[in-house]
Length: 354
Figure (tube, helix red, strand yellow):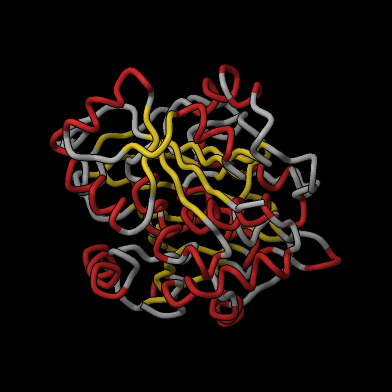
């Protein structure tokens, strides 16, 4: 059978995912890439034309098909047909849970469905390199790729606290997520000054620690995590201050060594987000760094032998993009070796040093 990936939405996650799947289609082992857009907008004409020129095929609802054609777009499929013929559906909208109940549960064609970080409860929470082994073929047909900051937090914890057969050394993890105001592709949502978030979860603080806890819960772990959030008046990158209290002595040299040995972690001496962002613009995939986290080496320190502190930057949606691709490849063929081999072409955008 043809291996077809269908993406729903063309926003900050959907658009680059469509691009990645089309640009690396053959190397990823994908036969066809289709995508759904809800509304035909003249302002989006250039974007849609470019995605289609790269090989993606447009699907639209019957009642708006003519609107897309009037803009010069070729509509290859009605929405229902595109969904039914897909091997995997990746929902990149904020309506993943709603679509699951109203549409996806009633389909028989696709092998599985993937939603993004905001859609808690959609399916098993997943971050590439953290809980891959918990995915069960034939059982995990619904997967929630967690948010970019949750990828960052879980990567820090696994890299610095996983002691193998001895379990995790983490006693408490605390994180302050300093979020960008909005994406550079967005006009709305910018803030004129730092705006602090509420602690709306008595146990975890914000959803970042809550979601990270649930990722590790799939591994049978009950980690003590707490996060706070503040939105900053910048469009560059999210950044995180972290504190990891562990149950054994650890030196800062070991902290740095562990981070450098993780192929999904970028290390940097740069302490300004604009320098990291500009590196991604110049060397990343369409401006995106696909690493899980960018750790600022000069900020790493250990207090009283058991308290690890530091700052890191979150590569925006880059880490979520990799996990979305990995989850889609796994749903098509759950052999982990095959997934790793098919992901090889995009590894050049996962930087060890920035």
